[in-house]
Length: 256
Image (tube, rainbow, N blue to C red; front, side, top):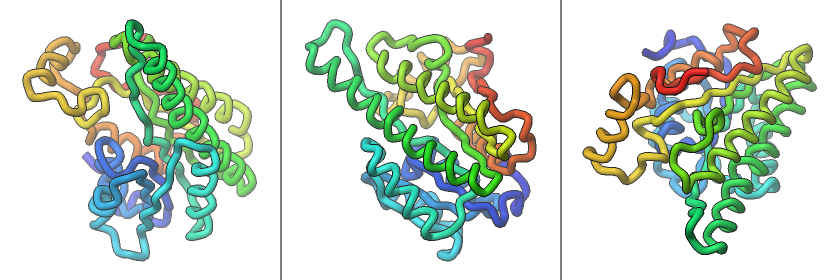
C-alpha cells in the first residue's frame, strides 16, 4: 500500500502526534518511502521513537512539544527548522475531550477550552509558521487531519467541541490554500471517518468496535494504513491542483 521506497527521498516531514494511533502509522509509511522525519510527541517519547526506528539517525529527529499553547507550537517549528529545512508539515496531533451537554458547566467549559487550545490555537499557530516559511521560499506542503465530524457535526452529542474545532482548522487551511497558491503553498485536508486506530474508539473492546463498524456503509472501520498511505502520497506534492481540497475517507458512510 505504501509508495515507492524512494518516493519521499530528500523531503523532510514534520509530523505532529507521531507517538501513537494514526500518527505512528503515518510515521512508518513516510519512513517506508525514505522521508526524513521530525516526529513530535507530547508525553510518549518511546512511541515516537519506535515509529521512526527504521530510519538512520541522520534522517530522524524526535521532539517533545506541547501544542496546547501557541508558544509551544512556535518553539516546535523553530526547533525543526534549526535542525534542517522542512518541506512538509503534517498536522495530526489533536485532542477529543468530552463536552457533556447535560453535565456540569465546568466540564463543558474545560472541554471546549482544551479542544480550542490544542486543535485550533496551537495547531493554527504551527500552520501559520509553516505558511510563512513555505511562502518565503516559494514551495511547501501542509497536510491537515480534520474529520468527517467537521463536515456534518458530530454523531456523538458530547463531542461538540471536537467537531467544531476540526471545522475551524479546516477553514483556516482552506484560507491559507486560497491566498497563497500562487506562492507555491499546497494545503490538503483529510476528513477521515471512524479509523481503527483513531481517538474516537480508543479504549473500546472488540464488540464495541464491531458495533460501530456494523453501522457504516462498508461494514468496517477505516484502516489507519489507508490514511497514512494517502498522507504519504500528498507529501510528494505529485498532484498540486488538489490544494485546498478536503478528501473524504469514510467508505461512503458520508457523502456530500
